[in-house]
Length: 300
Image (tube, rainbow, N blue to C red; front, top):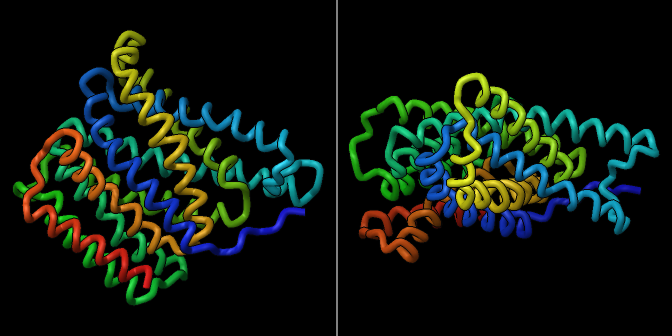
């Protein structure tokens, strides 16, 4: 019989930290892809690849007899399977809103401003949680505010005057908390991997429909953007978003989870410094230190 997972905050934190590392490196792939394909086409392709990559994982787990609690041979199993499908669709809608708006915004703004505006979800998740009856601890709320200061120092080297692209990134920051909180709710009741698979296919279907309605999908352009699509689809999508689902399930604290995931901006800056030889000023280093301090405060 399926046993509901017990909270494992340390393991959950590690999984979300790995997620942040992968997402941090993915920002470059997302920006490069816009030189070849349009936003909805990119989102549709990457998340179709993400969902397809999880299908053999699900089948292998079933063949190995790993109980995900979603067996349709029992009433409880059927209920958990329906929860995975329903939850995956709901989470997928919110993920599409967040990732789609972000992808549109990346076309028209700098990486620094996009990273900062997107990361505003770290203060929105605790606020949204209050309305859902999940009041965050004072230390977590304080850590979110501290992390926002660190994020500003790390990402913002130009004026905060909002352009069209900035507004899209700001709107995506309001969408991502719904995905985080929905994931926190549904993964407690079902298998995280199955839910993630449904979530990815939901994003792919919505983005694919909009791509054919408003864009001009070109197979040749997708081939030109193959490397960014593969990274975004397999690592940033199939691996990282599934780790997010499993990590949040083990943490069961969406506010603290959002803080850890916001470290993607730190790792993006570090990757640019180490791999692309981009500058790492004292201001950016201070921002990284402040953000890490905020994460430690939240964990304490």
